[in-house]
Image (cartoon, rainbow, N blue to C red; front, side):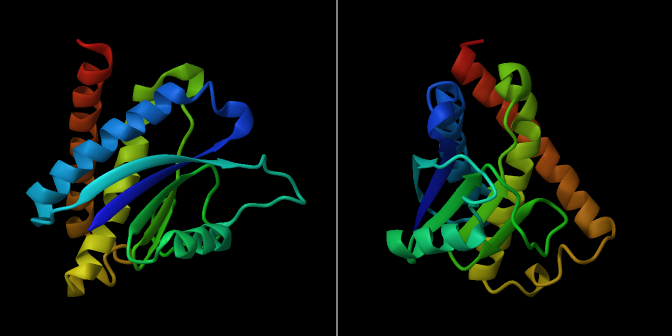
Length: 179
């Protein structure tokens, strides 16, 4: 399976967010290993940027546009959109959406150009939506209502995802900044 991360960025922000895209590329490699370790799923990963128009009342990018893009790129590839807008509808407690071989999240833009501060939020949501799709592919019954129920099970999953995001943050920090 090919897992294709697509980082949405406006043309005006393209140059200023190159370091952030480098982070996305490293994150993709991390998720290749994470999916193998956590779910025994072998994936190939790819990362690209998608230049999108600036949002306005007339030019509104939404989930339907991304679904059409997904279909045009090939529905057999798992496309994961790191978007600059919230999905209009979600059945999750996080700001993400998934369907068959398709996922999207609101990618939080770093404040003050500090990529690593937003890593925990972004990576936790990516892990969450990836888990949904992998569990769906494995026909896991626990996937169906996992976000609609609040209890110790979901709390422990969120706690583990946050810890994985912290580990990812430290690992990528060491890679990006050679610390």
